[in-house]
Image (cartoon, rainbow, N blue to C red):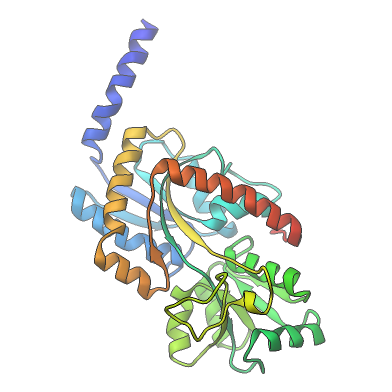
Length: 316
């Protein structure tokens, strides 16, 4: 009897995938509105809704470097109706930087696809008297702990970039954590911060308006699209920070449902208007298979554990 029940359950999985979705899907962005995860998730949600004829909403659940929203998804029913627009922080770095995690990044999620990758920009308030990374390093060495940098929260990529910069450049700065990148950008423009390692999505409009000054990017080399902006690594050898974002379902979500979510996400991310929209935010729309994304996330968890140990960065 038990075996017959189990067999019936297995046979039901393809049927579930064929009818999925039959109701509203929620994509949790674990950071505030206007954050990068938020602005990446919204066009995907709109396109999914248009395809499937059911509402796909973005639910902002910020807190603890993205852990609050991520934990909500990890503990949601594994049916494909609650998804996470996760980040390199929530699904790789936080496992190393927090002493206690409410979820296991290795085992509590079913990766669907990577969504985008980018680099950060080292952005200064115009009142800080530096125009190059070399000048910033000299100023920081002459004034240990006096320069402050903001981040989108403990354990986020801007926080880790600041920690790596201090370790690699041999300087000391003061970290100020915010609940999201928009808030840190606002305080930078107001002169309450000296610098931030910012996502292009939140900093480019202010750079273009002349309200902020960009010194460098955190990619390993210059971006051909902005050849006049140097890479931090040109002054601080070995420095590189390349954030990524991806779609996750709770662990245990039927493989057929994950495959359907993957196929729709891959289709959306290849659309010219989505690629152009992401490019305008300073990011590249990319995708891969659930298996490829799973392997990549596992590699990133291991890599960042080593980086965090080397920098001594902690979120608590």
